[in-house]
Every structure is written in structure tokens, then in C-alpha cells.
Amino acid sequence: MLRKILVPVDGSEPSWQALKYAAEIGVKFESELFVVHIIQPFYNAGLLALPIDSGLLTMQMDDIKKNAEAILAAAKEKLTPYSLKVTTKIETGHPSERILKTAEEAGCDAIVIGSRGLSGIAEFVLGSVSSNVSQYAKIPVLIVKSDKKTEK
Image (cartoon, rainbow, N blue to C red; front, top):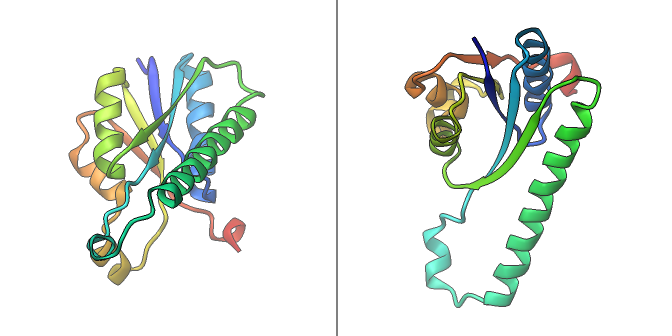
């Protein structure tokens, strides 16, 4: 039934909780976990008015990629107690769009994603990745609510 489950992780506690839920579901259904980290590109019109130091930009992108690799390595480590096939991937783009596209391209049967629990105003201004994913996904989506006790 659930052959492959996509789990987006960003290093936050809600994403780790989603990873744990996905692993527990994966064990029950003998699913593969497809763990993805999305790197958001720089979208800042103000940068266009400034001279850009390509060396500095390259260093920042290298740091961002190293951080993404570290997050995926931590995800793999958290999954070692489970007997699951795990695939990891780094994607670049708008998070909700990349999550949906990756799930489709990888042939995933479900998405398990953490919820940041943004306030009403923050969610209105920033949008919610988990809300967008659940709204536009063509496959089931489980949104794992954050445990406020563990975030403090």
C-alpha cells in the first residue's frame, strides 16, 4: 500500500518528529523512506542593486549545501534503528513546489511532513509549506504537529 514515503526535513524539531512518524509507518508497511531537504534559492530584489561578490556567494552556497548534507546525514542516523531502505536527496527551489514535484517524480505514495505551527499572521504573510503541500498533493499527506514541550 505505502511503498515509498516522502519526508521533507529541515533540521527543525517538527521535521524530526515527522521523520520518526514516517519511520514507524514505514516499518509497518515495509516502505522505503525518501528523505529530502530543500534549499531555497536567494530571492532578494535588493541584491540586484548591489555589486555581487561571486566568491562570497559561492562560499555561502557551499555552506548551505554542507548544512543540507549534515541534515540528511543526521536523518539517516536517526533512522538506523529502523530496518528501512532510505534514499536521500537535496533539492533546490520553493519548498512546497519542490516537495510536490519530488514526490511525483520519485513515485511516492504518501508525504509525512512536520508543521511549524506558525501563528495566523505569520502563516498569512509567509504561507505554510505543510498547508500548501496538503492542499495541492495528489497523494495522502500526514502533517505531524509539533510537540510544544520539546521545542522549548
